[in-house]
Length: 196
Image 1 (tube, rainbow, N blue to C red):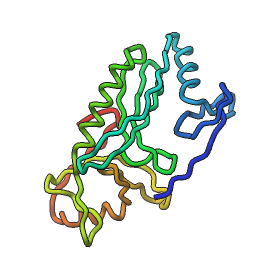
Image 2 (image 1 turned 60 degrees about the vertical axis):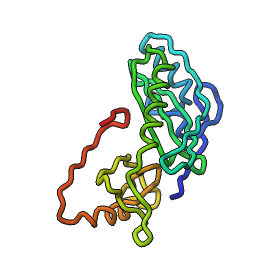
Image 3 (image 1 turned 30 degrees about the horizontal axis):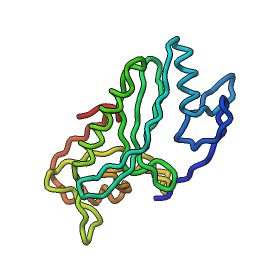
Image 4 (image 1 turned 90 degrees about the vertical axis):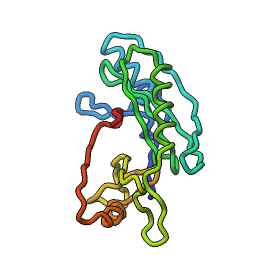
């Protein structure tokens, strides 16, 4: 699936960034884009604590099929909390695997980074779907699927899901569960920073 991306100029530092590298804030009815670093400085100043931005270099991990995935990292403050995200880039925009952890904004970021790396390694080692000659993908013998919901740039009405780092359209996901016609199921939705 194709992803559209645009460069924005940071209101604070004047540098250009992709949309996923910052956030837009409303100020007196006007929307201003801040890169993550400048945004974190603004928010930590509002909440009255010092925040040291640490840039983490991309890291490559192999999944359960031996395929390499390079993860980029971003840090963003939410009030007294901080999220650290690991994501792949596809055509210069986030796509594929995407993981996140949350901690106290004044805690050690290295500890949070270690927690995130453990999560990435654990989750990418799991496999939930298998390729099929006639149906695209099928849910494997574990009969469980984990992933996340995202927008489908080619469909305004339905989302797509990302399972094992692969974008699956809502229609294709429907075909995958059709083989379970007559079965019960449990769908649990939770925040990306949680694990269940």
